Length: 115
Length: 115
Image (cartoon, rainbow over all chains, first blue to last red):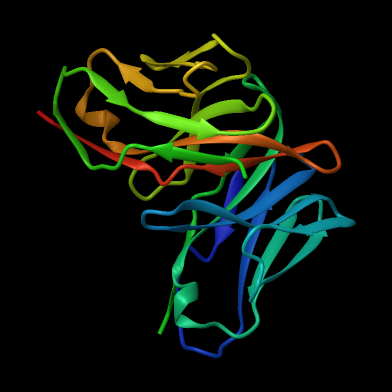
């Protein structure tokens, strides 16, 4: 089973709709992240959480909100989706690994299209 | 602020050719440097990392050396395979308040290897 899972994997929605993307992890990591990927821009950090009570804005948080329901779950919401939020969204977790401390592990991504 | 610049793609090679993907960075302090790989339809996977100047990260035949004097972390492989076709992201780990690290990504370089 995958260590970091995301649901849904694909979603098409309309402008103005509320959307929630969910992320679950079985790695036991405290730290979780949401990124968006746009062609030619790499990945940009939306929100990050270092434990259930610690949530912080990343570089592009406007139009998004998050909820850390438990250590293993971190959800991203678009309260009122707009077309320029069409992107590939990745959840990640981080913790100690054979690569060293604070290595980030990514989920498979959610492709969101806002019409 | 901290940033990562990598060569634009796509890079198209024949099987068994030598690969170089250039990456340079701007950072205050001494960041850790990473290469991530994204295969079609999948999330990002950590390929290799280096944590200090002159360190060489290596994995699966790929190598990259942390060059502080040229602020570079170029990815190389001596003989590529069709299965190496993917998008490669260079990233650095930047410290921010609270003593935690965040990843800053380059735009990604697509590699296509033909038989």
